[in-house]
Image (tube, rainbow, N blue to C red):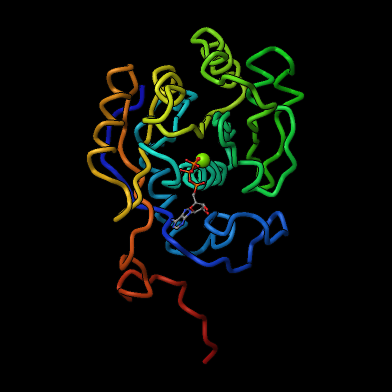
Length: 256
Ligand SMILES: Nc1ncnc2c1ncn2[C@@H]1O[C@H](COP(=O)(O)OP(=O)(O)OP(=O)(O)O)[C@@H](O)[C@H]1O
Ligand SMILES: [Mg+2]
């Protein structure tokens, strides 16, 4: 199990810039700050969260980490991708991001990749992991996309299927970051959270409702999830543009 810690801020609105691009395509979601602005303040905030999670795992055991939120549109998928990218910067770590949102999948779209076989196909035994895993286009990060559309996602998310898949992913990867649907509208996130080592709640500052987030944390805890903390999106005013003391660009070397 991960040891519990407090929250970290990350991923507020930032326009895309440009250097250090690995997949050269502007269609990659502009909020993927690890991709578009790896030297920026927001990317550094994501790394700070990553470092806390690494510190919570002193034995270096493979870990499954669910990213979820109370309701839709709070930034789960972007946060999951940013965090997975940050993990993959640690060169010795093998990392996979799993799109376990079988209702409104978005990881492939945000990475500008075509849909392929993925999570649902592997769960149902219709594809092997080797067939379904693909490079995410960022360093060595691998992607297990959502896969084929299924009629009733809750039906295929059986505990033994999930345990089996998580075990097989742990044989290959150090960090398994799992994007899920929101907690309150469906049971998927609760089921996945209960089988994962840790869960992070995404909260959108000034948008998320405290009561809904609290209800969602209670649901996850009741179902056996290990809620580690929150991933706060949309923080305004805490960036180098509004407070220069937060800026720490490398000093320019000038010749005398
Ligand atoms: N920090 C941010 N500030 C403003 N907008 C953001 C931020 N992060 C993501 N977005 C945008 O908000 C929308 C929702 O983001 P995202 O898809 O990550 O949320 P989600 O919680 O996964 O949504 P869903 O519940 O539909 O799966 C997207 O259009 C995304 O580009
Ligand atoms: Mg999503």
